[in-house]
Image (cartoon, rainbow, N blue to C red; front, top):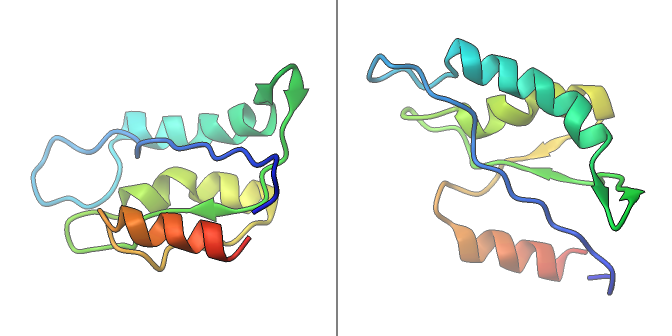
Length: 101
């Protein structure tokens, strides 16, 4: 991994009130759209950062929210979402990032 790497982690957007719905609530959909502008203008140490990769937990029957939250951003940036890791596979994600810079 390069010595100057920034990793930003966000939680998925709001889920619907109805149980069993794996998608986003309307406020979650709005947040996902707002992330398009926010993450294209986010700064660290007064410099706008450029996102190079997007990761989300793999879709499951219980939730598609991680992917749906960043899908609009993915489309806006032309970046593919890496969603090969299951939810809670934190160590596998960390290993993947460290080994595949």
